[in-house]
Each structure stands twice: as structure tokens, then as C-alpha cells.
Image (cartoon, rainbow, N blue to C red):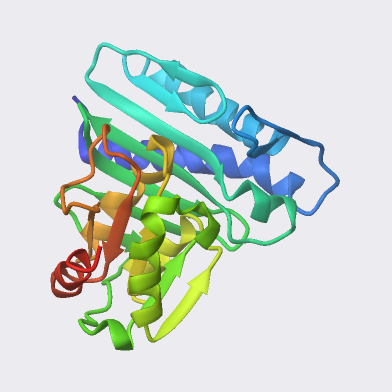
Length: 255
């Protein structure tokens, strides 16, 4: 087990270590390559994850780790740290400060802690089970818009929806009052702070969503899979996040 206050203090140090590797490489010439799934990876991704893993190895050796760049290691504590060192590598590579570092903590298969950190703009959201979400040390609340026609919708890329999922995307996005794109994990922090009302995505991997649910829920929002079930380690990567339960229920009926 881990005390949540202890875990929050640790995750802040983890993202500081990650940021120290990312900031000097931002908007600098940097080589990249394609992974097996054709997504890009840079030395910034790898250096940031190495920095995070080094601290966890020293201080939490019995915990498991799931990392985007260096795979998984099993633990004995029942806790697992889930790391996405740069969520939005394409944004990082093109000089846009919309990428984030995501670190989540699973207790068994349940997300209990998450941080969304943007190291260039110094925006940091922290959410923990049963606690209010904080943005840069201040409590934030999601917006209570209940009418999709008045809502701001966001997704990373419409082209990421598989053929069978496109209809849900089209129904919800077309009904929204405003649409935005390209936010990756940052969009969920903005939802928690009341700037976005709906995020709909499909094809997310474990390291893409574990950190997000505690942040959204701690701000009064709702984040589930497309069936309305709570997100767990085995969720299928299709997620719906909204600022409030009423809007969430209405949109689930449209999926």
C-alpha cells in the first residue's frame, strides 16, 4: 500500500525529473524513429521515461511499472505505475506545447492517482481517488454544461476512430456547439478546469488513460468507457469524458 499524500509527493518529483529531460530538447533538432505501431518516438520520450523509472526503482522497488517506451515490469505490492513520458510526441516534434507527461497509479486494476503535466507551460493537474483535483496547486471544477449544443467537444484526431466507431464520433461532434482537435492528454486537464465539456476518443492504450480518470473525476467530471463502465486496467481504450453526469448520460445514449 501507499499513503496518497506520499504518492502525490512522489508523482510530483517524477514529473519534475521527466520535465528536466524534456525541456532542453524542446524545439531543438532531435532524431526520431518509428515504433512497431508506426507512432514516432524521440530521445526525449526515452530519456524522460528512464528518469521516472530510476526514481521508482530506487524508492518503490516492489511496485510494478507499465511504460510506453521500456515495457512492463511486474511487482509484488499490488500497485503499478503507468507512464507515458510524452503523450503527443507529434506535437513535441513540431514545436507545439500541447503534449503532456502522464503518470498514473493503479491499485490492482483501478486508477487511484493521476498527473497531467505540461513541462513547457508549467501546467500540472493532479487527481487522486476521493480528493479534489488541483491545477498548479488550486482546486478546479469541471463546467456544468448539460446541453451538447452549448458544449465544447474535443478529440485528438478524427482519423483515429476505427470504422465501427466513426458513427459515434460523428453524432456527438456534429451536435456540439464547438469542436477542437489535437489536444492529446492535455484536453482532459482542460476539461477538469472547465474549458472543454466533452472528450471522446477510441484506441487509447493503458498508458494513455490511467492518469486521466482521477483528474477528470476529482474535478466533478465523469470518465468511462463507451458502455458507461468505470475505466480499469482492462478497458478497451474507448473513452467518454464529460464535465458532469447529466451530459455524460445524454451522450452515452448517442453512442
